[in-house]
Length: 121
Image (cartoon, rainbow, N blue to C red; front, side, top):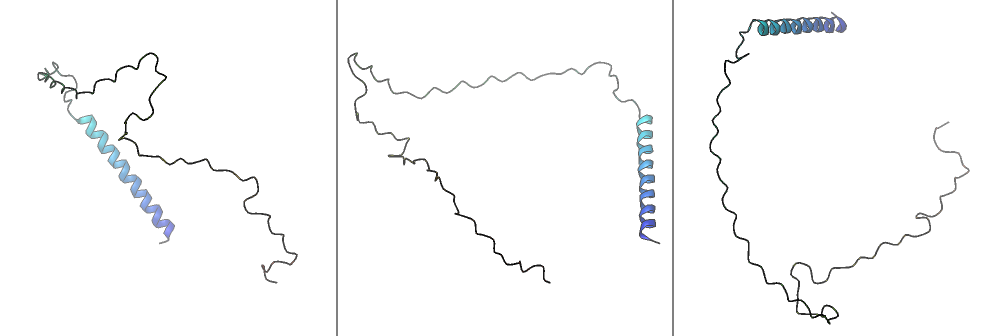
């Protein structure tokens, strides 16, 4: 028996088995009793009483706002004793990279006048 004949036989029986399964499924669906196709009355749903959410916790106390500066003040005073705790002492400043105007690798090599070693004669 050749390989082609063996594959043809297996495919034939696979198709027969699939068709048989399809026929059995359709028969089971057609002969099944109509369970709950049209219920007499809708089921009564009793929802539990909703739970009220717990009261929100009190907000944390805030520091009082700083008084407004007098009308003649020019702005903020220099170092008013404020040391930020949320930022590093001095963040490094990176300058943008500078692009060069010339080629990166220089000039390409000139091809040699010799014949290549491949293919061999």
